[in-house]
Each structure stands twice: as C-alpha cells, then as structure tokens.
Image 1 (tube, rainbow, N blue to C red):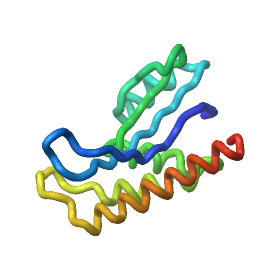
Image 2: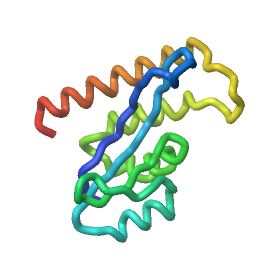
Image 3: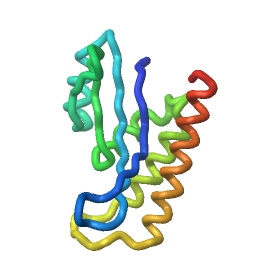
Image 4: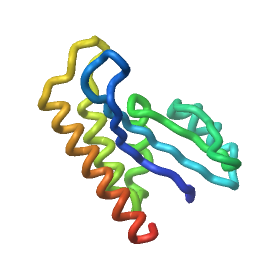
Amino acid sequence: MDSDGSIRIGKRESAKGVSGVFYHLRISIQQHRNDNLFDWLLERFGGCNDNVGKMPGWTVAAKNAEEFIGWILPYVIVRREECELALEFIKTLRSRHRARLSQDVLDVREVLYLRSAVLKHSRYNKGV
C-alpha cells in the first residue's frame, strides 16, 4: 500500500467544566487510486471512510488501531517509529469504566505526545 497519511497522538483540553487534558490517537490514510482499499480497511479494522478535500481516505482511532498497526508494522519503513509510539499509547488505554487516569498514565501519554510531535516536526523539516 503506497499512500499519504498520518499517525498522530493529539492533545486537547477537556470539555468545558471538566478539568484536565485529553490525549487521542488517530491514523489517517489518503490515496487517489483505490477506493476499494478504504472499503476493505473499514470492513477489516473499523474506523470510517472520509474525504480530505477531494482525496478519499480512511481514518481509525486508538481503540481500533492496534490490529491495523500490527498488520502493517512488518512493512513500514518511513513511519515505523510513529507506529511504535502509537502501540505504546494504546497500552495506556484504560478499561471502559469512568475512573480518572493515574498521574503516571497521564505522564506517559504526555511523553508519547511530545515524542510524536518531535517526529512530525522533524519529518516536515526533512521533506518526508
């Protein structure tokens, strides 16, 4: 699969009236040539089909990303370190209950977020 895309750990402030920060993982792929690829990715790994501008795409969030990353990791060259950071992030996901995350988990997520941002910034500077 040759495509454009991103593997991103993001951060935002929690919703109005709730203190803290929210970290998230999002993988997006865009490709001009093959819409069938996105239908297959959606069926196999979940996520959603979307369009970025006029380019068709597919996006998956953290809860469905682990299997996809495991599937592509043996073949990834350029974004290998980003995949590995994403897998580390997925390990920090809590169970379905609403308990607050420990400070240790928040600290790990912050480190992963910062490492992800450095990779993204260095990739843009190198033109990759």
